[in-house]
Image (tube, rainbow over all chains, first blue to last red; front, side, top):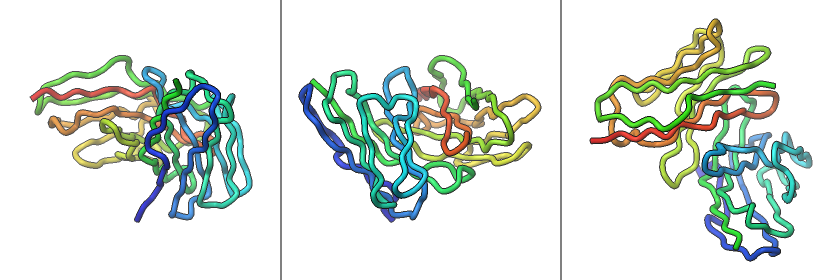
Length: 112
Length: 110
């Protein structure tokens, strides 16, 4: 019973490099989300998806892209990393909102 | 839009003390309300939830009651343990997502 799995768990990037964070869920959830967590800022929504093939912008989408080609996977891409993107990234998935989210364990990204 | 406000600042208390963390919300309609807990180095875990007015959510000794008249969902625990040290987030359902408060760090001293 894996739930929501994020890979990688840690990564250090140089400014300007690109990378993709992978989120996979095995609960057949329709909705998936990417958040970033920064000290004093709480959780901020980057992008989300309400179903396979759909994506939408959240509060802080600039500098990120996403794709949901398969229902179980939600990818977050950084095309040209910047130090301001140093953060902990969390993926979550859900059924209808009354049940709340299931979160992954996070990816700690440092951009130097 | 729908939003959640949590009390400012960390909470430090002694083991076996009573814990209250305030959460108030602004919403249209009838959102569901949640408390999440984040232990150091981990993701957020659902602690409890309530889906309609006057519902009481409870888990691991924590309780919160959905109060529509005061638009509140305060978290309480009667006797905290060191293992309850964590960050606690209040959240409410808003369209196709959850809106989170900024979280409260709780530190329990032996």
